[in-house]
View 1 (tube, one colour):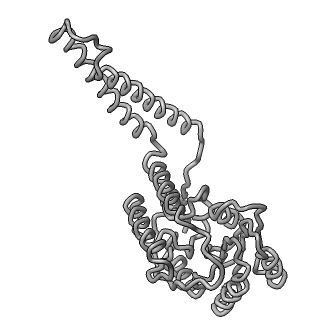
View 2 (cartoon, rainbow, N blue to C red; view 1 turned 60 degrees about the vertical axis):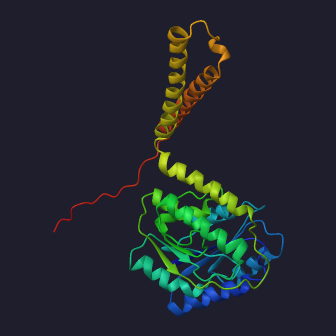
View 3 (cartoon, helix red, strand yellow; view 1 turned 45 degrees about the vertical axis):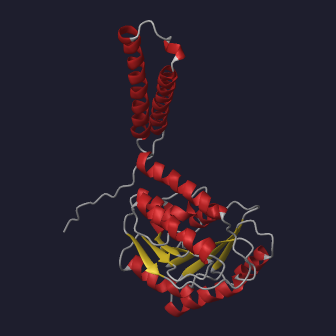
Amino acid sequence: MNISVVIPLLNESQSLNELCNSICEVMSSYGFTYEIILIDDGSTDESWEVIQTLSKNSACIKGIKFKRNYGKSQALHAGFLNCNGDVVFTMDADLQDDPKEIPEMYDMIINDNYDLVSGWKKKRFDSILFKNIPSKIFNFAARITSGIKLNDFNCGLKAYKKDVIKNINVYGEMHRYIPVLAKNEGYHKIGEKIVNHRPRKHGNTKFGPSRFLHGFLDLTTIWFISSFGKRPMHLFGSLGMIMLTTGFLFAGFLGYDKIFVNPGGRLITERPEFYISLVTMIIGSQFFSMGFIGELILKSINKSPQYVIQKQTNL
């Protein structure tokens, strides 16, 4: 199978028929073998009934239904587990992603050998104040943190080699950072293509202002995992050393001052430096303990690295 199109959705019953028809037209015109996987993430409208009708009318359309809303990441993960195409596309169900972009992105994966191609909605039909400007700030922070030079991390239209999506674990709300997850697994050839972004025809956006706060918190998480996930002692040990050194310096100063400078002065426990010394040494010890525990947890996880064996061919 050439292509799998994975589409998570929530309350998009009005868009599904037009979306699937437009995808099928593109696939047929280029002669692709394909499947469309629609993941109903706990819709409360008639989305599942529409999916059932579509799947009965076409063997290329499949449906997955969640009993409640779990989120876009979990929906994508379910779609990735059940797809069979050599190239896997993700799209939003609101008709803002244009299926006509699929052939060129497919060509970039197959002929240009990209591991992942992300869409870039350079011209957007969204609110400037509530979507465009926060999105630019978010993408700037993601580029700086991850080192991946993408202009639009959160574009729903992306294409992947099959082995990429089979080797990453999309959890929480990490769907925004699939390129970063892919890079962490060793897939470094990541490209970008300017794509047509269309106005929403039906319904309302499912994301509010809180998604940007959650996005930045998730970005912090993935930065930490990328930088220190394999060596937590490097972070916590460094912080512990700084805190312990600070505590010992204050303690040494207090001892020297009490013995040699002002032996008849205030008790050490009456001086604020004593509590600074005590608190910093306790916190430093805790950081060291966190680093050790993190290292022990990593040692208990036996994850074999991915590798390729190149064998000599007998001529």
